[in-house]
Image: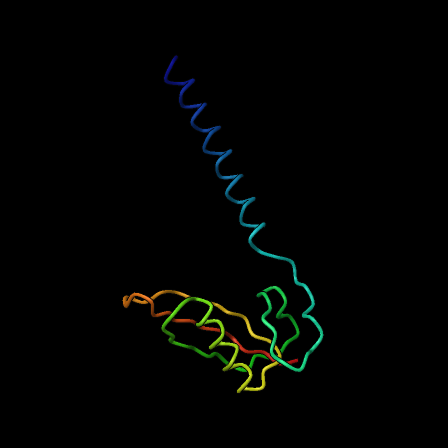
Length: 109
């Protein structure tokens, strides 16, 4: 009798956990938003703002300093490529302390 109650309880907990996890996935998947108007310099946008934009390619940067230095290096490469927008995909510290690797996707209108 006690085993049945425990099994029913565990099934309810498992079902509830699954529903919460699946509900959380929809929060992470944003609805498409329009990109901001084109400016005279590249603008950083989010992934859900890329709909309708033309992908130009990817750029990477390896910088010593801070994550902000890596983001600035990406922005400089976007300026050099004459991109309208860019999405930073990754900024991560390498094995070497203080050295940051970053990657971004460039877009144009």
